[in-house]
Image 1 (cartoon, helix red, strand yellow):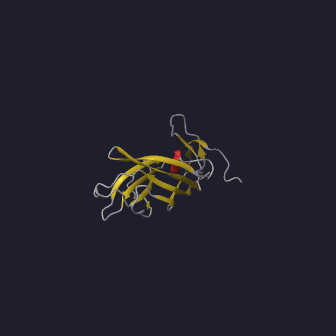
Image 2 (cartoon, rainbow, N blue to C red; image 1 turned 180 degrees about the vertical axis):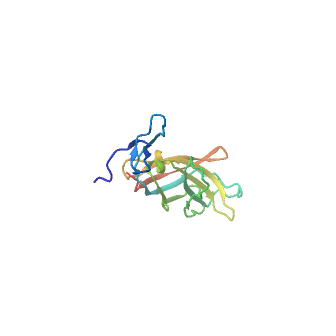
Image 3 (cartoon, rainbow, N blue to C red; image 1 turned 90 degrees about the vertical axis):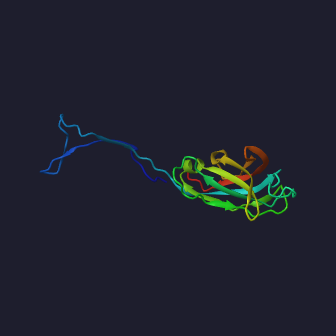
Length: 186
């Protein structure tokens, strides 16, 4: 079906209005009021859903606060961020459940992220992961990021990811899983 038709580029001269009969007149040669130039673009916005499936971490470093214990109680915090955004709007974050006494936690499905924008705006987002050890004061075990356009496929099917977790410029472990990006604008 057709949503709109017509020209997309406009170049409109500015005319004078005759005060007596309210008609438009060409400007005289000595007066050049100008032109209005613009392009019309129609974009589609929708609320995309980013699903994370079969996520697991491997080879997590032991928590610094509990050096005597080799196992952690990890959970993941994850969110989208636009690197070009100038605003300080809060970024909605999601969080996994805690997996107790393990350095290789896994989650079958995590709560989805939702983001409303155009296709270009959605795919310009960066997906951030932060893995914490669960305590009264959570301790960061590692973090990783990936641009969403690297995870996008033309169909709504899953795309695998495998990222190295960094902590203070050192590599500690991996996070891997699948991403499905649904309901993208066409």
